[in-house]
Image (cartoon, rainbow, N blue to C red; front, side, top):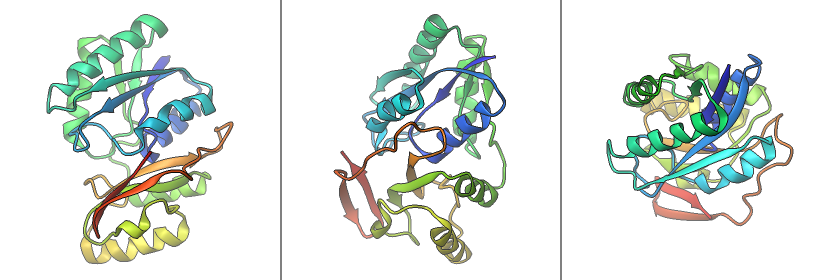
Length: 220
């Protein structure tokens, strides 16, 4: 089956790609929705500019579609990107990194249905703690690209989510009940290296944009 993977550069989008690749499906292209609204309801925004570098490192073509990120209207921009992928790469399905967000699943499934293609969420309703462990165990080098919740702090920006950080997240979760995978918007991530990359992603020149002790993100 020919599919397109939604690509944000974050761990969930890239781990779903990693899983699908090992199913031996034909990943024909990536789709990135570049939202100009940092508080987009549907799409990841920190370090979204790195998706071109990531697609090059994975040697898979990329379709980039800009959106203003306005609620519901941003779906129209996803529709445009999907139509491009169908026309240019004859895709038969879309793969997303959704784990728990019904808002995301319902809307993306709707767009796929309209275009007569399948919707796949290989991590849907899997245990978040187990998923994060699997990512680390699979040699994913993941860094925090955005921090947005109590219990976390902006000193974590740019730090790798390794086993040590995993243990910290366990302690924070015991007190604050945060989502291990950031499904509640607690944090965003960027995969700077993984087994399939030809070259790691360089973030040395990234700047920390700090809004408070618990709100900040990496910018270009």
